[in-house]
Image (cartoon, rainbow, N blue to C red):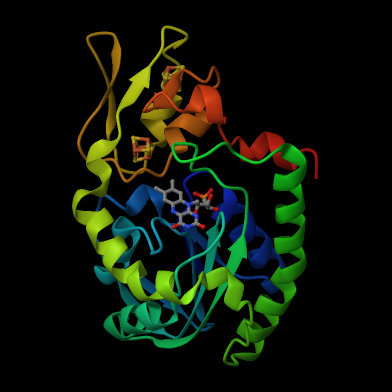
Length: 256
Ligand SMILES: Cc1cc2nc3c(=O)[nH]c(=O)nc-3n(C[C@H](O)[C@H](O)[C@H](O)COP(=O)(O)O)c2cc1C
Ligand code: SF4
Ligand code: SF4
């Protein structure tokens, strides 16, 4: 069973393609993140797919998984998407697996288009398409390990970042979880047509229409889905989208 969270579509794309290859059941965690944990039952291994946020699994995803029960097959594999590197997740995912009562069998980290426009200019469409194609080529080897229930042999040390990053990544991720999201200011321009797509798609139920205005609450997990789904690019964060671009993965994959 494939359980996935995706902000702007990268992890969703790979989760859906993996489900096709394996003929597996797939479950979107997004609508559940703000709610009570569920019980998942599967005769086949569990596969958890998610983006990397600040060199770790988004806390909202890890916390939700910790509130769930997993019955049946005890093996778990992780598939992560990221713009560059994950800071070395094996050890941390092994302890999360222990916490979930599952046996950690490995992590595959896929380089996909970066959505973090608050930090830097996003790559060109051609570069983004090249990383999607490469990840899709890599999926079958991930699928084969899952199918055979073998330990995953995934040898891409460069995708973990350097030794220093691997050392400090758990600390940075913890600090990001505690304080990191305070510095982000969401704004909505007068291009907004009140279509409410941002409101209905926010996994944290953090956006409302109040007094005729789109308003952001305090539960944001910075997944950037609202920015990505807005049909008129009315949402910005720290005023960076206008210079650095916005990832619209659905439009991009039409060119695949
Ligand atoms: C808040 C935030 C933090 C991120 N941190 C990292 C990171 O530490 N390393 C990295 O390579 N990419 C990072 N990214 C980029 C995403 O991991 C990447 O674009 C991912 O494929 C997004 O998946 P999604 O489209 O399924 O949400 C970050 C993105 C966001 C929004
Ligand atoms: S407000 Fe936007 S970025 Fe924050 S959780 Fe909701 S959809 Fe994601
Ligand atoms: S998705 Fe964009 S246009 Fe639609 S309500 Fe939200 S901000 Fe306005």
